[in-house]
Length: 416
Image 1 (cartoon, helix red, strand yellow):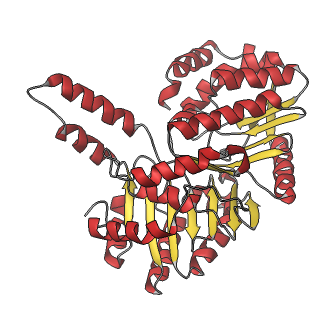
Image 2 (cartoon, rainbow, N blue to C red):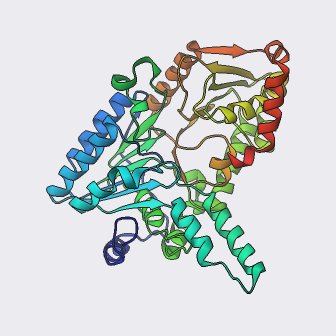
Image 3 (cartoon, rainbow, N blue to C red):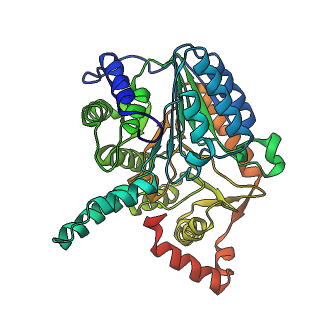
């Protein structure tokens, strides 16, 4: 038994999935039929749960955070109902984002027979290091420990739910009560999500399968991983899915963001809760502003990870001097992740920080419908109205302690 599912069960799922996935030749068709953008967790999870309720064959749910609460209980009960009517359900959560999941929901899921995995949990981390400890050859012990530690820094930050293989939910909404206004009131987090209907692409299911089979630190999903990487990297511009599952795809994603910044003509509008960009991306934003592009960044005025906000503030002076405009979202926590460059837009789980750009599993979507882009523009303007603009004079007035903390956390930015 591994994290609530037997090896035999996993093997059966692999055999079942393999004949349906042939991604060695890119599919030249629309990836989905319809899409809908959400900015309120209450609306998103209402339709999300309805979708699971109507599932006929399968539900694959993957999330970074799965917290105990009203929403967590509701999702679990909805999944149990699906299993009882014959739907195949799998649940995948991250070991760092959901550290208490096994204790809170594990026994309940095992009792009803819902397979679940915890991606790279810390108990696995420590047991893996211990199992590779060589008393006779200490250098091998150090090398093994460093290798496992480096792999442990890679987290499953995706939030996606795949229903019957044709309905996919993606965005920055975790399974947490912080996304529900009915529970948290005015302190509800600001997030963005998108639902895709009539999905034809197999990429979502394949990416889920790769993470599902990841018996860390040994990776058993080489065939699927190779197929997905080959398919996604074949025609980056022609596919509206950005699924970063390895170093090559993360590099292609960073390259694309950089090209968008360098080629932007009219605007670059970014909304992100964790802003620690790469050097080239930072310089691209500055150059865009200097050539007259409307560069606006909406960043958190308060954050659920304060040290990241402190580190982010280190970038403010250079951006402001280049002509970029920075706005800090007020009153509540900002957690949505959207980017608009001219007529191109991006919605998903990726932040503009070191973790998302270099380490974690992420999924992002380029909306294809005009109304989706218009709704993102409208929401960005609304978010601006709830934000306070930051000026260079404000930075100069910051207390010495504040500037010192920013300097300190900036030095450790790659750890966040």
